[in-house]
Amino acid sequence: MNAPGAAPQRSTAPRAKGAPEYATVAELLKLYRSRAASPVEVVKDLLARAEKYESRLHCFVTLTPELALARARDAEQRLTRAGSAGALTGVPYGLKDVINTAGVLTTGQSKILQHNVPAEDAAVEARMKQAGGVLLGKLTTFEFAHGGPSWDLPWPPAMNPWKAGYLPGNTSSGPGAAVAAGILPAAIGTDTGGSIRMPAASCGIVGVKPTYGLVSRRGVLPNTFTFDTCGPMTRTVEDAAIVLNAIAGYDDADISSVERDPVDCTRDLALGVRGVRIGWVRHWYDGDASCHPDIAPAIAQALKTLEQAGATVEEIRLSDLLVYQDCKTTISITEMFSAYEHAFRTRPQDFGLMFRNKVLSGALIRAEDYFQALRQRLALARELARAFREYDVLATAGWMTPAEPARPDKLDKFLRPPNITTPFNIGGGPAMNIPCGFSCEGLPLSLQLATAHFTEPLMFRVGHAYQQLTDWHTRHPTEGMTQ
Image (cartoon, rainbow, N blue to C red):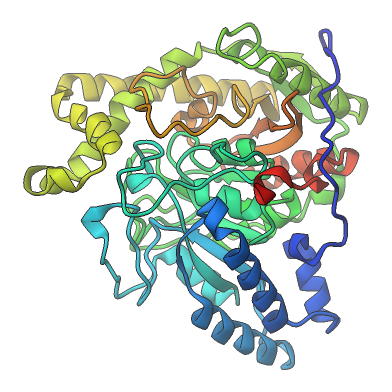
């Protein structure tokens, strides 16, 4: 392994160990089983916390206190009856507001659906409900999970609990902020080019993009059919594995769903990393002008930690990020315009400026360009498949920068530096961001791990091993919560 670089900056944020609001999913389940905690009381505490911080963080489009308390009471009854509790009984969670909920407002953060109340649950919500989870509300996003942080919509953008006036990241922004702030132990987001992993990086939590087709997207507002995935956002890798177990599974009503035997994502958590081969994709970020100077040392130190625990770490070169980004953008902008073409023709004034400016360009993509991008995607996916024959895990930075300041007076750019998360959407396999340090400004930094298709247990094994060796995931924000 090459020079590890300097150690990442340590956060001055208090660890708040034992604080009830920061109980993990695994901890809550143990407390419930031993009758040391009540789902109803936990939900009441978290609803009060949501009310306390909502005016600063804007995590929620819709809070559902009555529904949450009803489900919590049902969870308490189930916990007293042998064999009736589900895998997430009594665990509070939130849903990104592009996920349909029967009888509960689902807006996509857009005026187009400002009063939309679906008649049916999305498949992922049905599975969370079946597992006994307790829905606290629908969480802030970008318009139809695209565009940017917009101030010309009926709901303000979410804000980052780590630093006042800073954003919590890309489109699963409300989930990232709510989990980091201790308002929820878990949330479900969506990821098309990094929209789970980027806010996980900015908020110092765990964000997982599962293998394409592992989790049903039925009932989720579309972004890009070719890449859209649903996945968990939690504070620990173990929690993410628990939640993914609950939401994964075949759905005949989703044509992208893959029929496979269930796999327990928690099964290998305790195996450690001895003998695991890690390919370090360093060139995607190290030396890039857009990369924050604290990123490279933090990633190097994280991989040194894994190497010292028994993993083999070697550098690997793949196609440049821009090649992946251009391929993804061509496909995505075409498919997204197609998904919302009718509304663009009939109600263009009801879209936010950022969404309208970005997605309208999809009308100009030629069929030839779209199909060339699809062909290139296959070539890039094969490149990643070859890499996974040589290495068990690919590792790189979770994002190029820490959280960025909110700028209501400045339009988002259509062309930005390439997303370091996008290659694994192109490839379709699982990828996960986990906290690995803090910048000199006290903002979270993130390590990205990826594995081959349907090898989530291996990915969780490596991430969990890292969290057993470090304490970054135990640190919690204060500044953005109090200002």
